[in-house]
Image: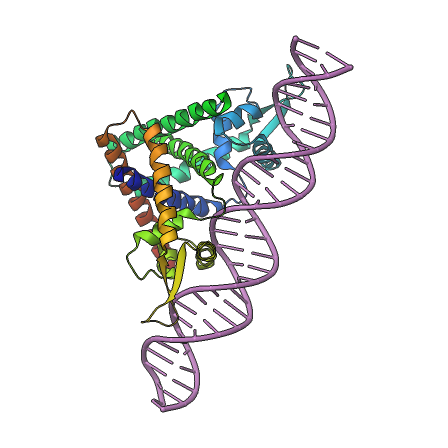
Length: 151
Length: 151
DNA sequence: CTCTTACCTTTCTCAGTGCGCAAGTTTTCC
DNA sequence: GGAAAACTTGCGCACTGAGAAAGGTAAGAG
């Protein structure tokens, strides 16, 4: 029981860390939803907005606005879907790829500096544990939602 | 290099999870900065606003507003500091303690359900790894800030 | 002792980001 | 034709920071 409370506090600290990281990055490039850009890039070709919404658990309207911002900055292209006139296919532009590489570089430097005392195994272990954690949390929420829908 | 990118993606997923958790909780109690309440409770007696600002890396005005909200809800009391008339000492009220227990209960249930497949050792290992991670990140940012101040 | 300066808040306004909900538009599918 | 889907847009809320003003106090100079 107490272990869970401790975990909660750690998660809160982590939230603070991520806010710090975000802010120090945002100083250089404001108003660009970089996370979403990475998600688009991770998805194979033919990325629809609804997939992004499902993947990120965000509202479609949020996705729409974020994509619009990326398009405005020339990082993403909106192409008409030949099979579905309602939908758009999103594609990362060359400029978007450059921005993505910049972000990866920057984040790599930040983490390298912060985790200089970590072995590769420790980093990998944390990554795996986080993946399992997020997966289990999401699964728990999904089943919970299903229960609510059922009743 | 690639390991760091993977870590970044995991952190982003974690952000999504925390957003989901927050939202499902916020449905019940909107507008109450529960995290700050826990921070106040964690600090021993005689908690000053500036300590909270330093601890959370938030702007003093943000802290002041959050504390004001907690005071308005009767969860925190603002008492004059006997040693420093300028400052206020923040104390969690009985009602605040009840709210805190509610939150701990609720979070405990959520984590119990989500992490039912985890052993106590695995939970502890993740908690320790997260603590180290956040600590190193913060230390990195602190030293970086010092360097910027120095030049 | 007094005065000046520095400090600890608190409060206000303005701004910016991120997000959800509801309503509307266009297109698809039965 | 009508239900459903894929957005898009408008509105509002929560969170945060910057800056300024105000009230009160602490601490050191003289």
